[in-house]
Image (cartoon, rainbow, N blue to C red; front, side):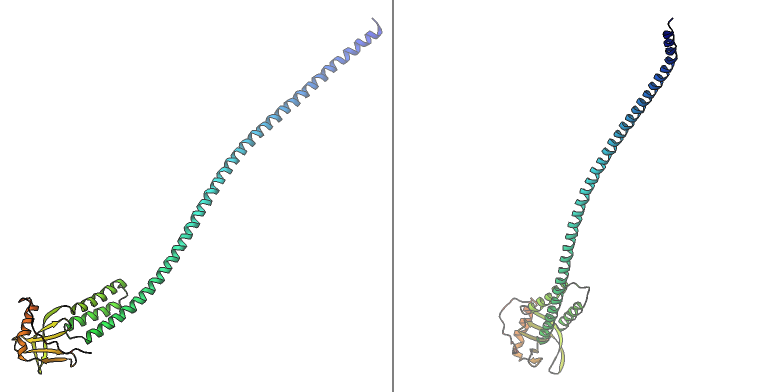
Length: 254
């Protein structure tokens, strides 16, 4: 065998195991790198998936927040509108309260003046139903200072009294009273002819009188008037049919 061939074979035999070892080492490193690369890609993929999930969750939360923001804005608009309406209602109530207070004050003053005039009119009128009319005035005065009484009720009662007084001028009436006549107190039938005349007659129909408002006292009438006055009293009591009678009207105050 050639010396060179022998040397070559020897060298080949020497290097072959080394090459195999080197190749195996390289292959292992490549596999390791590939494994690392695959792990990295898997990790990246997992991160991408997680990011997508987080992004979707954030998008959902953002959509929910935007919806809540719209709902909140609408709620605030409604509250502002309600507040505006409440403010207007409050201002309107204040205006009404002031107007009501003004009307109450004016009405109270007006009714007080009416009551004063009514009392003065009764005092200057013929003296019929004196106790009843005085009691009505006293009741009205007490009512006018009662804070629990409504203005409407005060108005109603004052004008009811006015109506009653007005009706006296269009009605006739007979009552029994004790009067002073000729220096004596006697029980008589008092005949009221509206507000025109006030006549009276003793129960035995023998004495008659007419009230003189100028003198503020009863004036005796002649006996010739007894029959007509008795008939007038009977007609007022519906004890006889209506017919014409002559009655003294008394004096009219100027």
